Length: 346
Ligand code: FES
Ligand SMILES: [Fe+2]
Image 1 (cartoon, protein in one colour):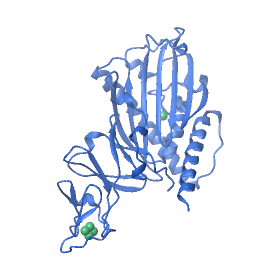
Image 2 (cartoon, protein in one colour):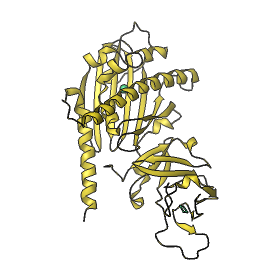
Image 3 (spheres, protein in one colour):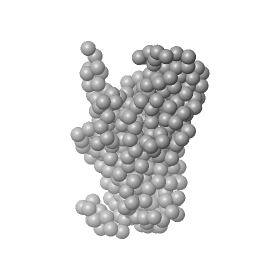
Image 4 (spheres, helix red, strand yellow):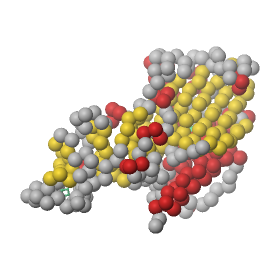
């Protein structure tokens, strides 16, 4: 499986990692997580070095895991520290340990060379933990390759079709012109739709009525390997929103962290941070339900797409203008993975 290893991936939400074991497949590797006595999260290969029983079937002895089968014990660095009835511990008796950080409201795991793990490289999703915004989110398991999610999020012309009942309206696809810009480690896709109806979700916030006309924006930033930040919103038409005056409107940062489970499925972590009705739990609930329903609609179409690709042998499709962002993102990631493979070969 071709993945970019030297990168941070979201493992999950802080409350998913406690005293007990949380077992998760990430980039095709089984990992067991647990919170140590000092409060930090440890991540070890979830497969005993002896006879491959998942360590998550074992039990904790403080910060040490004792395997359920023959009782080998591994510390939080992955080193075997005890073998019953044996004094010598072979050098190979160890399991991989993965660096973990908690940042921006998520728990991140570094899947590559531990020596290269650099906390400053965690993608910016600060809106999730910033009190200036009201945030909510969840994780969905999507039965599709993570790049199909990238394509989906970088081409929002689908919102008028897949999301007609939630965040879409058919003017988004038919009127919006996109601009695609290359970034250092990614790509930005900007779409403005001037003088359109607000989508159902925006009306449910109470800020807009269905009869209003708004200028609507979607600014999508992809950062390799698998982060997407989307700034969306709308303001009354003709009041200068494209020039930066967004008074009387609403804005939301929609955060997406796609963590590949393997080649055909993805842990899809999403969150929204909004700059209006701060602290209003009722609005948070409405938006959570709306966005979650919208992403459920994506989940369904992506599963159908992945199934179709598998059944028909991954044929090449025809490209349209709306694909520009997704195509560039794929190129950037493919290049990074190729560089990684070049660096690793002797
Ligand atoms: S399989 Fe883990 S101790 Fe034997
Ligand atoms: Fe969507």
